Length: 547
Image (cartoon, rainbow, N blue to C red; front, side, top):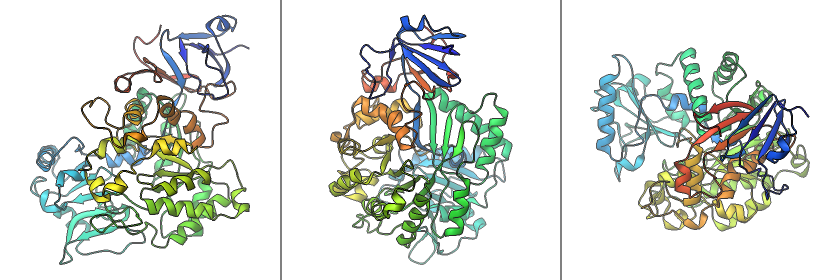
């Protein structure tokens, strides 16, 4: 064996259930981007290598993979001022006034990350932002990414003067007289305004994407499951890869959207994209939706929320969603379905449980997933564990946007019983399920170390005075790390060649300055990713990180 590089660290967590970590290995050899050997420091002395990288007392794990994010869509969703830190309407208006003052004449005022809790019990309306935006066209994206608030001038430019009808469960919210309030629910309604806004140039988007992917690498990520593929996305990835020597700094597994109103011709076009890609990115699945969000009143619940909303599915005819599932599953194409409410999760289970045996066995390696699962009753936990479906969840959706005392918008809408079924990560693991973890960036921050911490704390890391939210659903340190390593690989159907430090698997690694399996979660959130490797090649290396 003549490895290209040997990587040394005093602690290496292989995350391979079939390997004994005691005494733990301290050396990994890499050849041609694949793990060639795992052993002790003394073993490594007999491995002649072109390069040796020694991280001393640091900790090496399989590369961290975010199981749900939106890099290209996020470029558009994060234009303008960041409103996520505003705790009340006055704070939002102050940020808007500042943004309007620095926005060139003729341009739109934009904002993102708007928390609906700032409105209290009042309905979000354009009158609340018109003067702060100086009467200019303005679009504010709410934090969930499924809704937006438009100013009066923005509605005028878009020609929105009355209710609209859509193929999906979207809504131009109107008052009792039929006058649009400015609140736009779900993608089709938001797009009415978004399509008349000035777009960034291709080169501007490419530069922002390059910077974003570097930020991901510096945070400790070596991969991401990308849950969108909008117009121009593949061209951006391809152009960026051409610009970068050695390829993208992390792997991207992409799933284009399949939306209501589509049929077999559309599904065929989506299926034809499977396999498109480059060295470290590719289209590998399909993303579907059965509902929206609790905060919007567009989730799909068995019983309406406290405002009488969240009763309808995203596909007005759910049998068409089931037909799409049969189409893709029968062709061995992995799917990921957005399902937040209890009825939504049940509908996905129904669709997959009803697949004929021949369809189920068409491609047993194709993994099918449910994304989010924010409120799930006991009966569905049992069904989930038997279905073979994978859960993909985002711990910081719980810790950032809900509260233990149920005074937040999400909990208030659901009521106590359903709010107590919040983000049942531990129960899904106890039932034997695979649980991949992620951020859903830009809906929540992408940094993985605080997410690993929040998964254990059930509160925001660093906020020691906060009460945990349904603390019985906390994950152990190992379960949290599995959600970003071994279970992330299983959630993508890639366990055979990634997710653990095992000979023959990809040489993707993350190096920590603390031990994620033993350090206090609050300290983990404040720790640093010292390095990342993809294909055994350094993608990020912090100054002073070598032993």
